[in-house]
Length: 130
Ligand code: THU
Image (tube, rainbow, N blue to C red; front, side):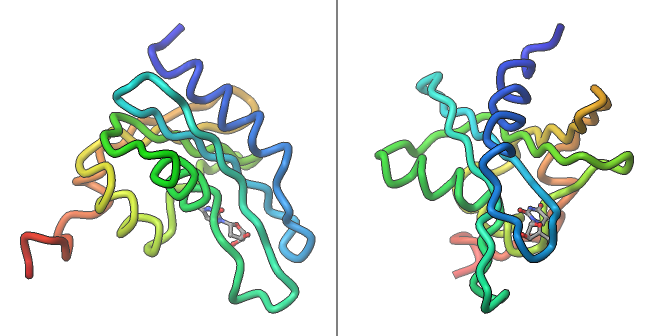
């Protein structure tokens, strides 16, 4: 039992919707807003490969487009023994909207790891750099 169980469950559920026809690597993410709402996302691939959007960014764009701004955790779920951290592009986006939140990595076997965003993204370019 952890305070992130519901978030991990939401990420697992979203992963079921992954459109991963090219990589067959299905990813689910879930973002928790300070309002309490949870927004899920899955990776959405495309035949032109480069237009693929990661699960984390789908979750962020869904939440932001619904008017949410404050977030306090994000979970990423894959079916791998080695847990999957967010890619570089997603780290930039997570930092922009969430800042130094806990990133909860999990797999389908119940393995989990919590990494603070500042550890994944130690020297960010952000609005304070402008
Ligand atoms: N992917 C994500 O959705 N999130 C990550 O954190 C890593 C990678 C997706 C992108 C692509 O659809 C597939 O995984 C393989 O790279």
